[in-house]
Length: 436
Image (cartoon, rainbow, N blue to C red):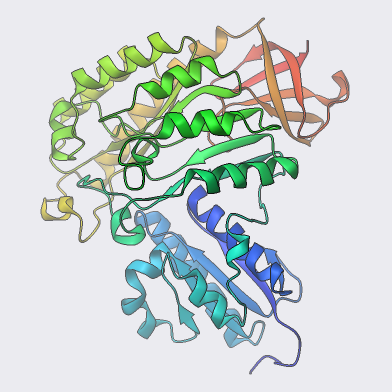
Protein backbone atom coordinates (compact mmCIF):
# COMPACT_ATOMS: atom_id res chain seq x y z
CA UNK A 1 0.00 0.00 0.00
CA UNK A 2 1.41 3.39 -0.94
CA UNK A 3 0.80 6.59 0.97
CA UNK A 4 -0.92 9.49 -0.74
CA UNK A 5 1.41 11.97 -2.39
CA UNK A 6 -0.91 14.96 -2.80
CA UNK A 7 -0.50 16.54 0.60
CA UNK A 8 2.23 19.15 1.17
CA UNK A 9 5.50 18.01 2.69
CA UNK A 10 5.61 17.88 6.46
CA UNK A 11 8.88 16.60 7.94
CA UNK A 12 9.43 14.78 11.23
CA UNK A 13 13.07 14.94 12.38
CA UNK A 14 14.12 12.15 14.75
CA UNK A 15 17.41 12.66 16.61
CA UNK A 16 19.52 9.90 18.15
CA UNK A 17 22.84 10.13 19.96
CA UNK A 18 24.72 13.07 21.41
CA UNK A 19 24.19 16.80 21.76
CA UNK A 20 26.19 17.39 18.58
CA UNK A 21 23.46 15.57 16.67
CA UNK A 22 20.87 17.70 18.45
CA UNK A 23 22.52 20.84 17.05
CA UNK A 24 22.65 19.34 13.55
CA UNK A 25 18.93 18.55 13.70
CA UNK A 26 18.13 22.06 14.92
CA UNK A 27 20.07 23.58 12.00
CA UNK A 28 18.27 21.30 9.54
CA UNK A 29 14.90 22.30 10.97
CA UNK A 30 15.70 26.01 10.72
CA UNK A 31 16.64 25.59 7.06
CA UNK A 32 13.41 23.71 6.33
CA UNK A 33 11.30 26.32 8.13
CA UNK A 34 13.02 29.08 6.13
CA UNK A 35 11.98 27.19 2.98
CA UNK A 36 8.36 27.20 4.19
CA UNK A 37 8.44 23.46 4.79
CA UNK A 38 6.53 22.37 7.89
CA UNK A 39 8.78 20.50 10.33
CA UNK A 40 8.48 18.94 13.78
CA UNK A 41 10.95 17.27 16.09
CA UNK A 42 10.20 13.72 17.19
CA UNK A 43 6.46 13.99 16.60
CA UNK A 44 4.72 10.99 18.15
CA UNK A 45 1.68 11.21 15.89
CA UNK A 46 0.40 13.80 13.49
CA UNK A 47 0.28 14.10 9.76
CA UNK A 48 3.95 14.21 8.73
CA UNK A 49 4.68 12.36 5.51
CA UNK A 50 8.49 12.61 5.48
CA UNK A 51 10.88 11.35 8.18
CA UNK A 52 14.54 12.31 8.57
CA UNK A 53 16.42 10.09 11.06
CA UNK A 54 19.61 11.65 12.41
CA UNK A 55 21.59 8.63 13.57
CA UNK A 56 24.39 7.80 16.01
CA UNK A 57 27.16 5.31 15.21
CA UNK A 58 29.42 5.74 18.23
CA UNK A 59 29.24 2.40 20.08
CA UNK A 60 27.30 -0.84 19.69
CA UNK A 61 24.25 0.11 21.79
CA UNK A 62 23.87 3.43 19.99
CA UNK A 63 24.24 1.77 16.60
CA UNK A 64 21.58 -0.78 17.47
CA UNK A 65 19.16 1.94 18.61
CA UNK A 66 19.69 3.76 15.30
CA UNK A 67 19.14 0.59 13.27
CA UNK A 68 15.99 -0.27 15.25
CA UNK A 69 14.63 3.23 14.62
CA UNK A 70 15.38 3.00 10.88
CA UNK A 71 13.63 -0.39 10.69
CA UNK A 72 10.59 0.96 12.55
CA UNK A 73 10.15 3.78 10.05
CA UNK A 74 10.84 1.43 7.12
CA UNK A 75 7.91 -0.63 8.40
CA UNK A 76 5.78 2.52 8.74
CA UNK A 77 6.54 3.30 5.10
CA UNK A 78 5.52 -0.22 4.07
CA UNK A 79 2.20 0.34 5.84
CA UNK A 80 1.65 3.62 4.00
CA UNK A 81 1.96 5.73 7.15
CA UNK A 82 4.77 7.86 5.67
CA UNK A 83 5.88 8.50 2.10
CA UNK A 84 9.61 9.10 2.40
CA UNK A 85 12.27 8.08 4.91
CA UNK A 86 15.75 9.61 4.81
CA UNK A 87 18.71 8.70 7.03
CA UNK A 88 21.55 11.04 7.96
CA UNK A 89 24.19 11.36 10.68
CA UNK A 90 27.04 9.20 11.94
CA UNK A 91 25.65 5.70 11.33
CA UNK A 92 24.75 6.68 7.78
CA UNK A 93 28.18 8.24 7.21
CA UNK A 94 29.91 5.07 8.35
CA UNK A 95 27.67 2.22 7.24
CA UNK A 96 25.40 3.42 4.41
CA UNK A 97 26.93 1.08 1.78
CA UNK A 98 26.28 -1.96 3.99
CA UNK A 99 22.81 -0.83 5.09
CA UNK A 100 21.42 0.19 1.69
CA UNK A 101 20.89 -3.34 0.43
CA UNK A 102 19.34 -4.59 3.64
CA UNK A 103 16.85 -1.75 4.09
CA UNK A 104 15.65 -0.82 0.57
CA UNK A 105 12.71 1.20 1.92
CA UNK A 106 15.06 4.08 2.78
CA UNK A 107 14.84 6.70 0.03
CA UNK A 108 18.34 8.16 0.49
CA UNK A 109 21.32 8.09 2.86
CA UNK A 110 23.36 11.15 3.84
CA UNK A 111 26.60 11.70 5.75
CA UNK A 112 27.45 14.08 8.57
CA UNK A 113 28.42 16.95 6.24
CA UNK A 114 25.73 16.46 3.59
CA UNK A 115 23.23 19.08 4.76
CA UNK A 116 23.04 20.94 1.40
CA UNK A 117 22.44 17.67 -0.46
CA UNK A 118 19.80 16.57 2.04
CA UNK A 119 18.01 19.90 1.70
CA UNK A 120 18.08 19.65 -2.07
CA UNK A 121 16.49 16.21 -1.87
CA UNK A 122 13.75 17.73 0.31
CA UNK A 123 13.28 20.41 -2.38
CA UNK A 124 14.72 23.11 -0.14
CA UNK A 125 17.48 25.62 -0.87
CA UNK A 126 20.46 25.81 1.46
CA UNK A 127 20.28 29.39 2.74
CA UNK A 128 23.79 30.60 3.54
CA UNK A 129 22.46 33.67 5.31
CA UNK A 130 20.95 31.34 7.94
CA UNK A 131 24.29 29.94 9.09
CA UNK A 132 24.00 29.42 12.83
CA UNK A 133 20.20 29.79 12.90
CA UNK A 134 18.41 26.94 14.67
CA UNK A 135 15.02 25.78 15.85
CA UNK A 136 15.82 24.79 19.42
CA UNK A 137 14.63 21.40 20.60
CA UNK A 138 15.78 22.19 24.15
CA UNK A 139 13.94 24.61 26.45
CA UNK A 140 14.60 28.14 25.16
CA UNK A 141 16.72 29.13 28.16
CA UNK A 142 19.64 26.82 27.29
CA UNK A 143 21.23 25.70 24.04
CA UNK A 144 24.00 23.35 22.99
CA UNK A 145 26.61 25.41 21.18
CA UNK A 146 28.90 23.57 18.75
CA UNK A 147 32.20 25.41 18.26
CA UNK A 148 33.89 22.90 15.96
CA UNK A 149 33.28 19.76 13.95
CA UNK A 150 35.31 16.56 13.67
CA UNK A 151 38.49 15.51 15.46
CA UNK A 152 42.21 15.09 14.70
CA UNK A 153 42.98 12.98 17.78
CA UNK A 154 44.14 9.40 17.32
CA UNK A 155 42.55 7.71 20.35
CA UNK A 156 42.70 4.00 19.63
CA UNK A 157 39.10 3.20 20.66
CA UNK A 158 37.29 6.03 18.89
CA UNK A 159 35.48 5.93 15.53
CA UNK A 160 34.39 9.58 15.63
CA UNK A 161 37.03 10.80 13.11
CA UNK A 162 35.74 8.13 10.69
CA UNK A 163 32.24 9.59 10.91
CA UNK A 164 32.83 13.28 11.55
CA UNK A 165 36.08 13.84 9.68
CA UNK A 166 38.99 16.05 10.72
CA UNK A 167 38.80 19.00 13.08
CA UNK A 168 37.17 22.17 11.70
CA UNK A 169 36.75 25.21 13.96
CA UNK A 170 33.82 27.55 13.45
CA UNK A 171 35.14 31.13 12.99
CA UNK A 172 34.89 33.21 16.14
CA UNK A 173 32.85 35.96 14.48
CA UNK A 174 30.21 33.40 13.45
CA UNK A 175 30.02 32.00 16.96
CA UNK A 176 29.60 35.43 18.55
CA UNK A 177 26.84 36.20 16.04
CA UNK A 178 25.13 32.90 16.89
CA UNK A 179 25.39 33.64 20.62
CA UNK A 180 23.81 37.09 20.15
CA UNK A 181 20.98 35.58 18.13
CA UNK A 182 20.32 32.94 20.79
CA UNK A 183 20.45 35.53 23.58
CA UNK A 184 17.97 37.73 21.71
CA UNK A 185 15.57 34.79 21.67
CA UNK A 186 15.83 34.15 25.40
CA UNK A 187 18.76 31.75 25.72
CA UNK A 188 20.63 32.32 28.98
CA UNK A 189 22.99 29.32 29.04
CA UNK A 190 25.36 28.18 26.30
CA UNK A 191 26.68 24.64 26.62
CA UNK A 192 29.85 24.57 24.50
CA UNK A 193 30.35 21.25 22.72
CA UNK A 194 32.85 19.78 20.28
CA UNK A 195 34.73 16.53 19.90
CA UNK A 196 37.56 18.40 21.62
CA UNK A 197 37.03 21.97 22.87
CA UNK A 198 40.73 22.45 23.60
CA UNK A 199 41.68 22.07 19.92
CA UNK A 200 39.57 25.09 19.00
CA UNK A 201 41.32 27.55 16.73
CA UNK A 202 44.38 25.51 15.78
CA UNK A 203 43.22 25.11 12.18
CA UNK A 204 42.13 28.69 11.45
CA UNK A 205 44.11 30.77 13.98
CA UNK A 206 47.21 28.51 14.22
CA UNK A 207 46.92 28.45 18.00
CA UNK A 208 44.61 27.07 20.68
CA UNK A 209 42.14 29.90 20.96
CA UNK A 210 39.45 28.69 23.34
CA UNK A 211 40.34 31.31 25.96
CA UNK A 212 39.75 34.22 23.56
CA UNK A 213 36.51 32.66 22.33
CA UNK A 214 35.28 32.32 25.91
CA UNK A 215 36.09 35.94 26.65
CA UNK A 216 34.19 37.12 23.58
CA UNK A 217 31.17 34.91 24.28
CA UNK A 218 31.24 36.10 27.88
CA UNK A 219 30.76 39.66 26.62
CA UNK A 220 27.48 38.80 24.85
CA UNK A 221 24.66 40.54 26.69
CA UNK A 222 22.03 38.16 28.03
CA UNK A 223 24.29 35.10 28.30
CA UNK A 224 24.43 34.36 32.03
CA UNK A 225 26.06 30.92 31.98
CA UNK A 226 28.66 29.39 29.66
CA UNK A 227 29.45 25.73 30.29
CA UNK A 228 32.35 23.68 28.85
CA UNK A 229 31.88 20.12 27.64
CA UNK A 230 34.38 17.64 26.20
CA UNK A 231 37.84 19.02 26.90
CA UNK A 232 40.85 16.83 26.09
CA UNK A 233 43.40 16.58 28.94
CA UNK A 234 46.62 16.29 26.89
CA UNK A 235 47.78 19.78 25.89
CA UNK A 236 45.03 21.48 27.91
CA UNK A 237 45.29 25.28 27.38
CA UNK A 238 45.65 26.51 30.95
CA UNK A 239 44.82 30.12 30.04
CA UNK A 240 41.20 28.97 29.71
CA UNK A 241 41.14 28.66 33.49
CA UNK A 242 42.08 32.33 33.97
CA UNK A 243 39.06 33.37 31.90
CA UNK A 244 36.83 30.92 33.77
CA UNK A 245 38.01 32.26 37.13
CA UNK A 246 37.70 35.93 36.17
CA UNK A 247 34.38 35.90 34.28
CA UNK A 248 31.33 35.37 36.52
CA UNK A 249 29.16 34.09 33.67
CA UNK A 250 31.49 31.20 32.83
CA UNK A 251 30.40 28.26 34.98
CA UNK A 252 32.96 26.70 37.26
CA UNK A 253 32.40 23.41 35.47
CA UNK A 254 34.52 21.30 33.16
CA UNK A 255 33.57 18.10 31.38
CA UNK A 256 36.88 16.37 30.62
CA UNK A 257 36.60 12.70 29.54
CA UNK A 258 39.71 10.98 30.94
CA UNK A 259 38.76 7.41 29.86
CA UNK A 260 40.88 5.53 32.44
CA UNK A 261 42.98 5.90 35.57
CA UNK A 262 45.70 3.37 34.70
CA UNK A 263 48.79 4.63 32.84
CA UNK A 264 49.03 1.26 31.14
CA UNK A 265 45.51 1.60 29.72
CA UNK A 266 45.99 5.26 28.81
CA UNK A 267 49.00 4.26 26.71
CA UNK A 268 47.04 1.51 24.96
CA UNK A 269 44.23 3.99 24.38
CA UNK A 270 46.69 6.47 22.80
CA UNK A 271 45.59 9.29 25.09
CA UNK A 272 48.98 11.00 25.25
CA UNK A 273 48.91 11.32 29.04
CA UNK A 274 49.71 9.29 32.18
CA UNK A 275 47.96 8.84 35.49
CA UNK A 276 50.52 11.11 37.16
CA UNK A 277 50.14 13.87 34.57
CA UNK A 278 46.35 13.60 34.83
CA UNK A 279 46.48 14.02 38.61
CA UNK A 280 48.78 17.03 38.26
CA UNK A 281 46.46 18.59 35.67
CA UNK A 282 43.36 18.13 37.83
CA UNK A 283 45.19 19.57 40.83
CA UNK A 284 46.27 22.60 38.77
CA UNK A 285 42.71 23.12 37.51
CA UNK A 286 41.30 22.99 41.03
CA UNK A 287 44.01 25.34 42.27
CA UNK A 288 43.36 27.90 39.51
CA UNK A 289 39.55 27.76 39.76
CA UNK A 290 38.56 27.10 43.38
CA UNK A 291 35.20 25.38 43.65
CA UNK A 292 35.22 24.03 40.08
CA UNK A 293 33.16 20.89 39.40
CA UNK A 294 34.92 18.38 37.17
CA UNK A 295 32.92 15.78 35.27
CA UNK A 296 34.64 12.84 33.56
CA UNK A 297 33.83 9.67 31.64
CA UNK A 298 35.64 6.34 31.84
CA UNK A 299 35.76 3.13 29.78
CA UNK A 300 35.62 -0.28 31.44
CA UNK A 301 37.00 -3.40 29.78
CA UNK A 302 39.34 -1.96 27.16
CA UNK A 303 41.44 -4.68 25.43
CA UNK A 304 44.23 -5.85 27.72
CA UNK A 305 42.68 -4.36 30.87
CA UNK A 306 43.79 -6.58 33.74
CA UNK A 307 42.25 -6.79 37.18
CA UNK A 308 45.32 -4.87 38.40
CA UNK A 309 44.62 -2.06 35.90
CA UNK A 310 41.00 -1.91 37.07
CA UNK A 311 41.98 -1.78 40.74
CA UNK A 312 44.58 0.89 39.97
CA UNK A 313 41.82 2.93 38.34
CA UNK A 314 39.50 2.46 41.35
CA UNK A 315 42.21 3.73 43.74
CA UNK A 316 42.75 6.70 41.39
CA UNK A 317 39.01 7.53 41.40
CA UNK A 318 39.06 7.49 45.21
CA UNK A 319 41.96 9.93 45.26
CA UNK A 320 40.52 12.22 42.56
CA UNK A 321 37.01 12.57 44.03
CA UNK A 322 35.44 13.79 40.82
CA UNK A 323 32.21 15.74 41.23
CA UNK A 324 30.57 13.85 38.35
CA UNK A 325 31.58 10.60 36.67
CA UNK A 326 30.06 8.29 34.08
CA UNK A 327 31.33 4.91 32.90
CA UNK A 328 30.53 2.81 29.86
CA UNK A 329 31.77 -0.56 28.71
CA UNK A 330 34.24 -0.81 25.84
CA UNK A 331 32.75 -1.36 22.38
CA UNK A 332 35.00 -3.06 19.78
CA UNK A 333 34.71 -0.76 16.73
CA UNK A 334 35.98 -1.79 13.31
CA UNK A 335 38.51 0.45 11.55
CA UNK A 336 39.81 1.82 14.86
CA UNK A 337 43.35 1.03 16.05
CA UNK A 338 41.95 -0.89 19.03
CA UNK A 339 40.13 -3.23 16.63
CA UNK A 340 43.55 -4.73 15.86
CA UNK A 341 43.73 -5.78 19.53
CA UNK A 342 41.96 -8.81 20.94
CA UNK A 343 38.71 -7.86 22.68
CA UNK A 344 39.73 -10.08 25.56
CA UNK A 345 37.68 -8.81 28.51
CA UNK A 346 34.44 -10.85 28.73
CA UNK A 347 31.21 -8.84 28.53
CA UNK A 348 30.16 -9.80 32.06
CA UNK A 349 33.55 -8.66 33.41
CA UNK A 350 33.26 -5.34 31.57
CA UNK A 351 29.83 -4.81 33.11
CA UNK A 352 31.00 -5.82 36.58
CA UNK A 353 33.93 -3.40 36.42
CA UNK A 354 31.70 -0.56 35.18
CA UNK A 355 29.30 -1.27 38.05
CA UNK A 356 32.15 -1.18 40.57
CA UNK A 357 33.30 2.18 39.19
CA UNK A 358 29.79 3.62 39.46
CA UNK A 359 29.25 2.20 42.94
CA UNK A 360 32.47 3.82 44.14
CA UNK A 361 31.56 7.12 42.49
CA UNK A 362 28.05 6.91 43.97
CA UNK A 363 29.54 7.03 47.45
CA UNK A 364 31.77 9.96 46.52
CA UNK A 365 28.86 11.84 44.92
CA UNK A 366 26.72 11.25 48.02
CA UNK A 367 29.41 12.62 50.33
CA UNK A 368 30.01 15.68 48.13
CA UNK A 369 26.27 16.38 47.95
CA UNK A 370 25.83 15.96 51.72
CA UNK A 371 28.37 18.77 52.17
CA UNK A 372 25.98 21.08 50.29
CA UNK A 373 23.13 20.74 52.82
CA UNK A 374 22.37 24.07 54.45
CA UNK A 375 24.21 26.07 51.79
CA UNK A 376 22.71 28.55 49.33
CA UNK A 377 23.07 28.25 45.55
CA UNK A 378 21.99 30.11 42.46
CA UNK A 379 19.98 27.76 40.24
CA UNK A 380 18.42 27.87 36.79
CA UNK A 381 14.86 26.51 36.75
CA UNK A 382 14.37 23.99 33.91
CA UNK A 383 10.80 22.73 34.37
CA UNK A 384 7.92 22.07 36.76
CA UNK A 385 6.61 18.53 37.09
CA UNK A 386 4.77 16.48 39.70
CA UNK A 387 4.57 19.28 42.25
CA UNK A 388 8.27 20.14 42.02
CA UNK A 389 10.50 22.50 40.13
CA UNK A 390 13.58 20.91 38.55
CA UNK A 391 16.58 23.24 38.62
CA UNK A 392 20.37 23.11 38.27
CA UNK A 393 23.36 24.84 39.85
CA UNK A 394 26.29 26.06 37.76
CA UNK A 395 27.89 22.69 38.58
CA UNK A 396 25.17 20.73 36.79
CA UNK A 397 24.62 20.15 33.08
CA UNK A 398 21.20 19.08 31.74
CA UNK A 399 20.38 15.36 31.52
CA UNK A 400 23.66 14.07 32.98
CA UNK A 401 24.13 15.79 36.36
CA UNK A 402 22.26 16.59 39.58
CA UNK A 403 18.73 17.91 39.68
CA UNK A 404 17.80 20.41 42.36
CA UNK A 405 14.21 19.66 43.41
CA UNK A 406 12.14 22.53 44.82
CA UNK A 407 8.51 22.08 45.97
CA UNK A 408 6.17 24.23 43.87
CA UNK A 409 4.24 24.88 47.10
CA UNK A 410 7.30 26.69 48.50
CA UNK A 411 6.79 29.65 46.18
CA UNK A 412 6.31 30.59 42.53
CA UNK A 413 9.36 30.30 40.30
CA UNK A 414 9.43 30.99 36.56
CA UNK A 415 10.75 28.40 34.15
CA UNK A 416 13.96 29.67 32.57
CA UNK A 417 14.68 32.12 35.39
CA UNK A 418 17.40 32.05 38.02
CA UNK A 419 16.58 31.69 41.71
CA UNK A 420 18.43 31.58 45.01
CA UNK A 421 17.78 28.40 46.97
CA UNK A 422 18.98 26.70 50.13
CA UNK A 423 19.70 22.97 50.07
CA UNK A 424 17.69 21.04 52.68
CA UNK A 425 18.58 17.42 51.79
CA UNK A 426 20.90 15.51 49.48
CA UNK A 427 21.06 12.14 47.79
CA UNK A 428 23.54 10.60 45.38
CA UNK A 429 22.28 12.45 42.28
CA UNK A 430 19.70 14.90 43.65
CA UNK A 431 19.48 17.87 45.94
CA UNK A 432 16.31 19.10 47.65
CA UNK A 433 15.98 22.82 48.26
CA UNK A 434 13.65 25.69 49.12
CA UNK A 435 13.79 29.32 47.97
CA UNK A 436 16.39 31.15 50.05
